[in-house]
Length: 190
Image (cartoon, rainbow, N blue to C red; front, top):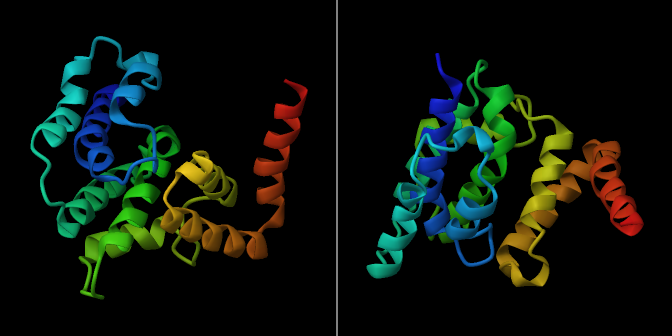
């Protein structure tokens, strides 16, 4: 009933289970996200210390990340975000988190072991294809966000996103122009 409570729960999961497990410079660090990027609607709903908990625990005692753990977290968050009633509110905020988690999982996966059906279903709904529920402009914005670190971002991430952008360009060039050219022209006027 209360969408903000669901949003807080998702933010907690992202800050404790996805972001601490990403390579450096894939996305904004947990402390910066908590300090600068939290929506005002979450103020007072969850202490900032709770959101920082996963990052602090990871720094104190770094654990070996299991690919299955990241896969499970992405699948759970993805299924919730992709529900029809939550999609308009939650997907714009967490689409980049999900893409980063999926790309990190693919980078860490050594062998082509089977993925869970839940994870595969989320991937089919997020990425281009007949089952996709994500519009091409949102996909382009997500790619832009993942490339925002420039050369500081991991090479594997830049290569993966470049492949996705190439595919997206072949399917919908207008989405690329809308996101990247509009951004470039607005940054020149600043």
